[in-house]
Every structure is written in C-alpha cells, then in structure tokens.
Length: 293
Image (cartoon, rainbow, N blue to C red):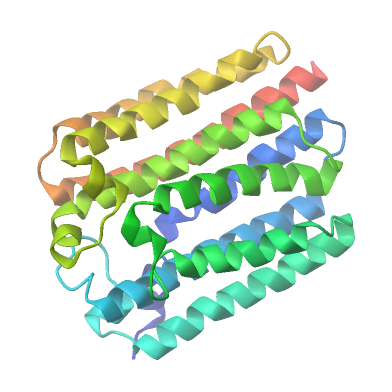
C-alpha cells in the first residue's frame, strides 16, 4: 500500500500552480470590473486544484496500465511503480473529479452562472480523455491544446465570469498568458519524456515537433506570455510589473535549450510552475493597482 507521502507525491504538487494562477488572474480581472467576490474566488481555486489532482491521478493510472511509465525519468508514479493498485489510483482520480464537480456546482449556484454546468461536464470528459479511454488525445499531440483551453481560457475567464457576470480584455489576455505558461510546463514535461514516449507510441506534441523545435516552443510560449500584457499598458500601466518575470524565465529557458540530460529538465517543471504563479501575482497586482491608483 502506498504511504500518504507517496499519494501526495503522486498528486504532483509541483503542477498545482497551473490550477491556482488562472483563479488569481481571473479574480484580478473581476476586481478591475468592480466585482471581486472573495468566497467565489476560493471556490474556483478549490475546483481548479481538485481537477488538477484528478488529472494527475488519471494520467498516472492510464499511463501506468499502458506501460508508458515503465521506463520514465522523473518523480514517482503510483501505478507504474506498484506503490498502489491501479484500481485505487483510478478511484482517487474520480473522487477528485466528483469533489471538483460538487465545489463547481456550489460555485454555479452562488453565482447563478448556470451555463457553466456544461463547462464542468466538459472538463471532466476532457480530463479523463487526456490519457484515458480507447483513443486518448494526449497520445496524439493534443494535450497542449487541452491545457491551454481548460487551464488558461476556461479557468481564467470562467473565474471572472462567476464574479462579474461578464468578461473583459484583461481577463482574456491574462487567460492567454497563464494558459501559455501552463502549456510550456507540459511541453517541458513531454520533452523530458520524448525517448520513452516514442518507444511506446505516445505521440505527444513534443514527439511530433522533435526535440529541438519542442524546446524552442517552450521559450516562445514564455516570451509571448510575458510580452502580451504590454498591450494593456495604455489603460493598465501597472501591468508592466510582469516584466519582473524576465529574469525568472532565463534559467529554465537556458536549460531547455542547452541541456541534453533528461533528468536536468525535472527542475524546469517546478521553475515553470513558479513562473506561472509569478505571472498571476504581477499581472493581477498590475490590474488592481491600475484600477485603484
């Protein structure tokens, strides 16, 4: 039986900034619209975290039973290592999805944003279909699209909508930014796994692009995410704070471009997660300061 520490490791806490960052950005955009609602923001963060952990367990289960993780480089995988029965990992994934849906239902009821119920159902289907089912889209190079849409556009603009009952350009640009950084994190993960993914026929976008182009795409995603908010400076001058992220982007970008040792890419995942949180904080603070100053 897996220990509590192994279950926590299997939840991949380093990926949780992907769930928190869009809520921070979306809430800041709602504040700029004069409609920040803290309790709804907390509910949205809970939904995002539960979905993220559920996706991680579902990925652990599906890749484990397929043998994809048998020779992988990186942190512990519960199913592939035998630390936990595959059945239990699958149950943990759906428990997280169920709790996320309950939190999401409460969020929809309190905000009266009933159409988002359909979005929630779509999130569960997409989360399981990433590596689960007979024809997982994560094995066809579509995982990055899922991450960009659901952990960028949907999570950020959905947060803004539940609080303000409308969206805005700052919400959209912030959604693109945090979505790109989350996608970059997945790209770094998949670049690390290119050799083993090729062996088992997992055609991620990194495998399809090839090693060099995939590494370059990581840097380009970070660059666009940091520079795109500058388009808002005429109305929100404090979003220039996002430029503080440039030094933080240099080390992981250099590692991605130059390091040929796959294990050296593991710290890039945590660094990219911190960049996503840094983006959320600087961009969100920029919107707030531009509104109140």
